[in-house]
Length: 506
Image (tube, rainbow, N blue to C red; front, side, top):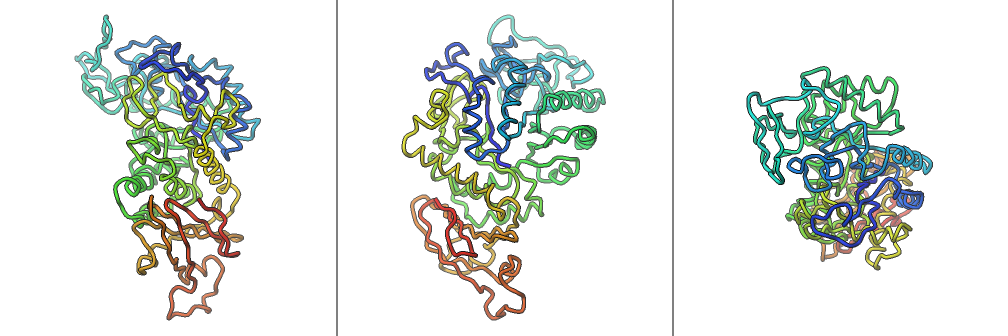
């Protein structure tokens, strides 16, 4: 699975003029119809198998008339849902959405949408008093007062990020309220919503903050859902202790944020050693194939932003390792392949390295690929052409090589740090192999210095790959193959051990 996270409001927006804190009329907004056949052909050609359509549900916004006090930005948070059975009117109609799903399927790709089970907008439809938690006898104190009459709520409902007090802060999810899963009525309503979207031919759900909803609900709901449908279920989850229970409850894939993503961030930005990556797969205890890997999404800083790596090319070692390390899905966020850098504040969202999900805005670098709707990269500069080609080659490589899309993983770091001609501070090496293919992957995280390394491959790895038999081992030499590799700064090489050739490099 190669997933493309497509934020609909941003993706098709062709407006290049920008007004700080501007509305839809000034700053524009992408729609379902902007994701036409030209766009989808280009996305498929990039190497994508699944499109996660982000921000499609009806949510608090200037357009839907929710009170400004409880609306984050004029466009509003797509995770403050007002109506689970409606699409955001900024994006088009339900018919427009259904036609988009049909177009995606005609291209041979699948559709994933958000399911947001833990919280919804303070002003919402379709729920009863029993579906919420309350701060009895206390009025809601909104941390934001914008226009009179100010928003009032009594008694105050608990805020979405588990704030059981009437006065959430500006840093809380004050625009949302938490759903009450002590009531079985909430369970029934949420299952009905999942079935509603399955009937719209949606192929799967990325479940927002899944860990804030009881595991028992997921076991019940996914079991019921799969009696009739087989949606892909992806959990946004940050507590490793819950990984196994959530997989047992029926989820297919889980976010690998606190493991691989955080480790790679520390290597890229904080001087941590490349060898720390080994601890990630050890901690997962063979759950690797169930982890969704990424280096960008709507919650995280852009790789090219000054607040993160600051250079899309210097981030490529982490991107490539995330894509090649295991068989689980890999995700790209729209604009990542164009070097989007989220420079500057746009309104409610400050200058924090993230493309705003709260404001009407656009993605200037992405628009160069969009090229007025041609989606041919016609406005790219030479560096962007090179970056896009890298992502395209990487995504296709994942699909076309059995060692990557179905093969096994072997970490070579345990033996190589013993030698002076291998640098575990900046270099990481591993094997991927299947019955028909044996690949050596070597990554240099150093941004300015090349590395010449000799990678030792131990006997047991050669036996597992079918390149040696146990009785052929020379027990006086644990490594019977040594591969010399030259790596330029921020370069990854993938070598075919059967043909002694380099099959992928940048």
